[in-house]
Amino acid sequence: DAGVTQSPTHLIKTRGQQVTLRCSPKSGHDTVSWYQQALGQGPQFIFQYYEEEERQRGNFPDRFSGHQFPNYSSELNVNALLLGDSALYLCASSLTPVAYNEQFFGPGTRLTVL
Amino acid sequence: SQQGEEDPQALSIQEGENATMNCSYKTSINNLQWYRQNSGRGLVHLILIRSNEREKHSGRLRVTLDTSKKSSSLLITASRAADTASYFCATDRSNQFYFGTGTSLTVIP
Image (tube, rainbow over all chains, first blue to last red):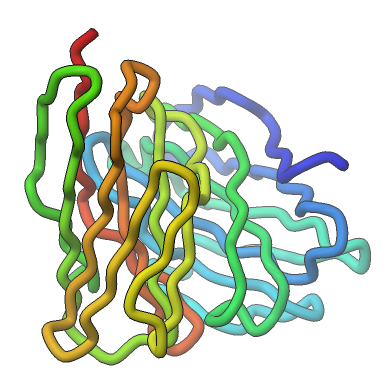
């Protein structure tokens, strides 16, 4: 049984560009959450998808958007990249309700913005 | 601001010793989870403790929760060099999870 997978592993972009990150949840999980982790910090919640809709959102600007597909996989899109967007982006999957279930994390995508 | 805060920020111990790290949070929770992260990789789920539980064990891990003090502790017994990692607590509020800045644990062989 595959766990949470993310692609790509690493990505280098320049300021102003757009990026799409992908996540496949653990088998049987229906909820996907995205986190941004800056160096030396804890993960910060970006948003959560369930039933193909954004259900919860953290304190991130509209440049951050996402999507969930019928097979529960998800994408994170970031437009107009800033240097400060450089971070490890983590995807986590779980069953709903998330408050009562374990979250399983993928290995992350390391984004570098130059 | 982040909900959970770990203490200490860094901890260095000898192999075989016990390691204790603490987490404090600000608002009421449904559950609290502890995670381990090795050197910028993905987080590994360690243990979940629900708000109506006071203590939970998993192998060499012991987690306590004191909802009156809004705090939790993670004890790793008989530490090993492989336990070297960053440890985070995560608390939920309105179906969102909030992580602290973590405790960096170094176990010296």
